[in-house]
Image 1 (cartoon, rainbow, N blue to C red):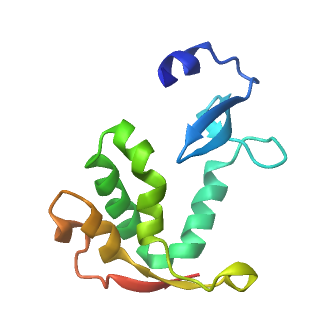
Image 2 (image 1 turned 90 degrees about the vertical axis):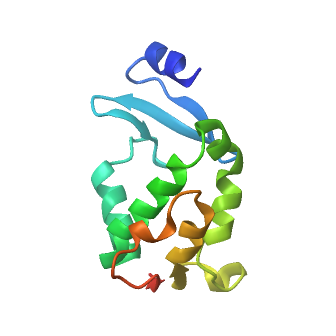
Length: 134
């Protein structure tokens, strides 16, 4: 269904995509489908990469590998159905309410790895599983 809608999507026509229980506005760009920013411009892949690098630092490759492995262990339908609950299971713990906004939390890579059906240690390598995420 998503592929059919993508093929019919005109270049400047926004489309609402359900993702983890929310509707995300996307737009077709020459680089592919991109989420739209609050100002309705397509999100830049480079800005998303910079944001993730600022949060995960030297651990970004490990985190991405663990998340890729977790995503690959589920069907797309199951991932969409369980995605937010999975996020809740591994997101860093920060104080509730406004105190938690932009607060750094401890990210536990083992939580992501523990949620996958595959061999958990292969994505860790020699690095530590716990680190502060900005």
